[in-house]
Length: 392
Image (cartoon, one colour):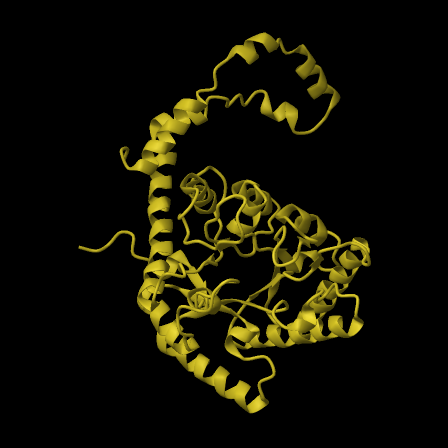
């Protein structure tokens, strides 16, 4: 009997070389797993049912590799992609590991550092494009500070804008079929990161020379760290037409960036996120990659890593099935459609003297509205029962 929750290519599930390849190190302890060679990762991801893979430039080609070494590594990886049928769904640039970027990359005060960052990004874009990537993510992990004693944050924003404008023009000049997705985070590894939420980035994008080429890559953990609703952040990005990529994982509020297996924390939040992405909540669906930017517990060996990967995909599929059931339940539909006054809504869209007059003529009883029950307790309980599996 086939498994209804087994992943397929249509699910567009992806993992990064750095996610399943995470060796289990943390600031207090050395790695607990051996590094995995990229082609081995490809084979195991294909075996697990993933659709795609992505990487930072240094995940694949070590920083400073010779041209010959670079060509050999890329050749082996291309052969692995052909062998497994996986696609490169996204590429990104590591602008946070090397000590040169200790005080920023695109926003650094030292122009030589900014030049190094832009050059490294151009090389990473070329690498991604050569392997079929159409999305390039930028996470400004070092674009921040511990103190504002020296740098005016407005200058940092201008430098970030200049870098994005430069790289957009570079992509156009090279004729790469590629867009950029910017990733927010409130802190860590910097004390404060300049573009701390998805909302910050959505506004920033409107100031660019080529805003149509740039969107966002929200991550569950990054918004949750700040105590924000990830569902609402993603909804804002989708409504703006800017959800170019998404990082799925799990996170507990108030903790360090945990990157837990998808669904391992805040299962209701994960459920509502899946409803949003799958379009069952009522709006349009997201059709891009569903990337699991997470890693296995440090306690696990390699077998545990692949259990983790299968678990991410399986949980998403189960939640998608639960979402379809919940949002097609007649009782749920009835409760959610309780306020469908079509004769009122058109009056609230565009101002006109006629609309104003009609609104003023409406007999609205504020006290009756305030006393009316909205049945959200009942609706939320039904949702909980779907999550607990006692409703079909």
